[in-house]
Image 1 (cartoon, rainbow over the protein chains, first blue to last red):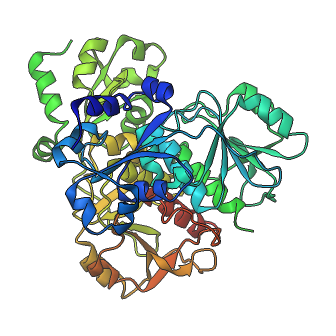
Image 2 (image 1 turned 180 degrees about the horizontal axis):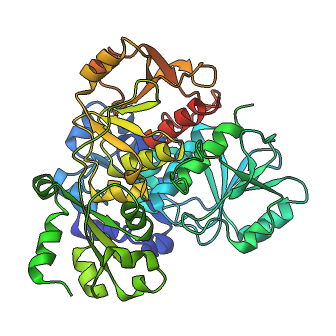
Length: 248
Length: 248
């Protein structure tokens, strides 16, 4: 059972302004809610339809609020409403960014699906720290959270003025930036202390951030003798760099 | 100028049923329309706003119909309408699938964005033939076309009963299937004559198709000592396999 008032509170969380004000966000679907509940996030409330209660004993520990499918469809952001939805507090404290660990830096990634997929892939490859420029799409955007498939709970997302942060870091580690021209990632000697910068979907790495890059890198296309794709999707490019980076 | 009747004809093409009936589809945005116009697709009509005409001399060859931004917003499928939109005929004839070329097979890929990203990445890596199971999302879905960023014009998309096709092919080439367990792609000796099968986003490769697979392959996660992502996005997994496949 859920009150009209509570429904309208939750629906407000569909909008960034109210997520910012309340410091809350929405997590939807089995996998994501399960990973949320086993993480260090503060979970405020879990909503479940009757179907969700059947095979999920772990849910009982979180005293889910039972609601109807119709009520779920009113609080969900998804076209096909989930059977589980949780409200959680945004992270306010983050651990320091380690100096000797792989770090990914995102310069103005604007598509929520791309950001979520990048977080999921980073998690797969064991990268725990991602630094986002202030103009990146919001981490707690429901589409981002959904695309992470729960990996938002494993990866620390730092928001920093990117050029300033990278300039400081460049004193003690390499800053690798993805460009259309640069050293082929297949031949580069990646290091665990590197930071890799990924640019915006349409415009690539901004001029200000480009000035902090100490090594330009690129992903080569396989053929040159006929027209092919002019670029890769940002999440795909990130994945290929991480695959190579983690592969030694 | 565009008539009300023409607007309603084009709006019908937002729906699969009418795309199937008319064998037409919509292409939107500079890059995609440009790549369409330089391909072997039959272009029926190109619509342009005044802004589009300025820096695009190549457009004149296609006698674009000038329409207002408001009219564009009515025929576009996008939230932010483009300055260029084209109507083209679906491919009816496709070349044979070559026996000695890399072929990608998709088993029930259901997300249009994933399919489009897979096509774009395949094009980047020079793969020209993709075989889709009949239950894959439609190639001419506007979201698929958009996500290809024009690469739909370079890659041949074959629709086939997948298990039957692969069973026949397995007599003369290897069928590699992506599973959670299998030989690590980093150590596998890929061949140019291989076919790689990618499964559905949630359920992986179907049982019927799995029976035709002659070699199971997998992408290893980088860490085992703490919880990480349980799987990769389907387009990311496909990209990593192609990267390794093309890398020798």
